[in-house]
Image (cartoon, rainbow, N blue to C red; front, side):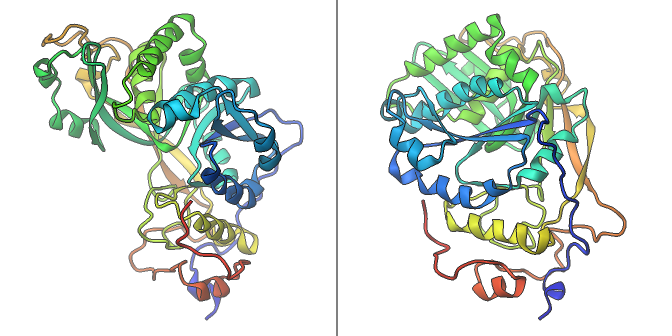
Length: 411
């Protein structure tokens, strides 16, 4: 079968992203990973795949939780693209380690003087040229305070007495979160020190922050003092306490500490540009993906997806220009516009605080492609499934892959 019949996507190759050699850094991406040997495959595969297409104006670093561990052996194996966050890997582990490494990366990334600071997990695929292009297409006035990713909502409740720091009711919209857990119910929780929400956060596999938002969180003296106090409380949590996820914690920190002082803008990345679906390894569904979360940790599938995106001059990757538009409503409704409202400092307090601060606008993206290029319909139901689990499909698509690795090997 001719490849055009198998892949009815682009009729012309995407535009080449031309970069100068002396342009300033636009994006710094920190890929959080572990320092133990079992995480090494999650770094070697991206190096041989999507990191090969890193634009000259992007910085990508693996951020390991290695504390005071010597980096000699790690640097030899990791080719100098690895940073060691001063976070004890054994003591914190998966409970608080990623969160503390994230805070360290946000501050360290500022030394590269980027326009955007990104965080990614080590089980994602990133199409770096399109990622940079999409970030630079954010309106200039909103870019310094942009928060880009798959935006969800959560409720936060903390207790200084019981030493708990918990989140409730993940929801697609603020209204859903409010219906699941109305703020009034916080008054019925025992020994609650802080009850806030619904508050937005960008999902952990990938998100990006404008540099001004990062500066406000980690460099502003007042905000940093509150941030350090919160981190100290997290470090003091008992080892029996469950994980505090870095993405929801960052949402709570931005909401509680700086949200009323800066005009944060939420940029929602929906499919097909952001894919969190690992149930179907389908080329058609991933045709326009610039972020793919390899949720099942089948590490070699990243190699296959990269081969697809770069085959035949990128003809199988549906590259599109984005047009961002702001929605009329803000992230949390007219009664929850402030960052300080619905934050109860006394247990049992039932009255709502007066909304303060600025509303957070939500932007959504739509693709705009030239008229002479077929529109990328990644979820077109009439299109046949192109199953990348079948190796004969690789041959038909012209993917340069060796038929010697497993697609169900987890790392």
